[in-house]
View (cartoon, rainbow, N blue to C red):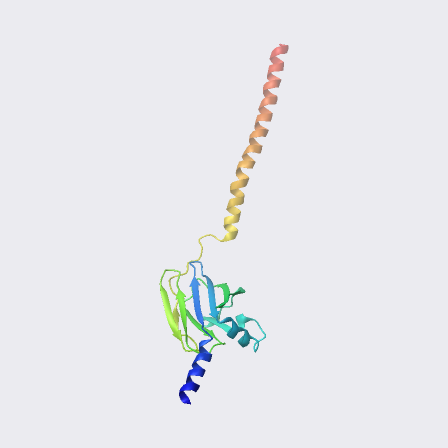
Amino acid sequence: MLVVGAGHRASAHDLERTQVLITFERDGSFVLDVANDPSWLKLRLERFPDSFANRVVLWVDGREVRPTSVELITGPAVATHRLRGRMPSDARTLRWYYGLVIDPYPLAVRRADGRVVIEEIAGDAWSGAIDLTGQFHAPILSSTMVGGALLILLAVPIALRLRYRRFNTFNTKDTKDTEEKTCRA
């Protein structure tokens, strides 16, 4: 009886099939994929009517970092919630929590510097402190500065062309006036 009961309980939890992958870029942006069995996930989310993002916590240097977007990618074997956001460029440590699962699952962190860190999370528990130092770099120029520089680069040739046309118009008038005076004389 115990063997049958233990086997049944284990197979029920195996339906979670949770896998988590966080991929970081140099600018601090991240893509967080949380994959689960679609049937299990649907049943589990019925108990929590709010956003999936509220079931996930990214705790960075003592404050929560919230994703800026959430999308659901469904498939026959796996449903993946893809969350996107940005870490502070000076981020040092990350702690992770996913509040829907019970069973242990792997958390893979693909750092911007190429290293991969894998931690086994004990189900409904926090991860250990994950080192984030040295992988993020603030961009040298902001997008506003780049846009302004492009605008100037496009405007300079146009301004030079207009100035050249005015200069030629004045020179042409002066030449015609001189020619007319010469012809009269």
